[in-house]
Length: 91
Image (cartoon, rainbow, N blue to C red; front, side, top):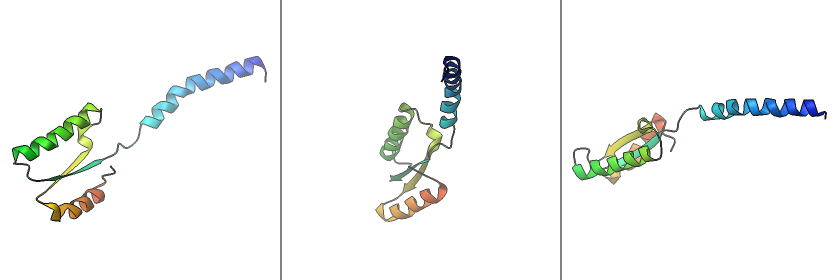
């Protein structure tokens, strides 16, 4: 391969690299399903959910990607998970 062709190929790849990286980042963000057992009106239960949300913000995730479902006890847990999956939660 001639030197000019190689340099042109290398320069083209360097110019296209940022476009390829940006294209990989664009996509549907994952939806996080969170089943909270308890009551939103209970301050302790609500503080646990707020701690989870704070952790999500701390790692740089969008808090709007959280799909939260409250259940009263373990007997509603399986139905809550089924509802989350149907709504599109992926994590």
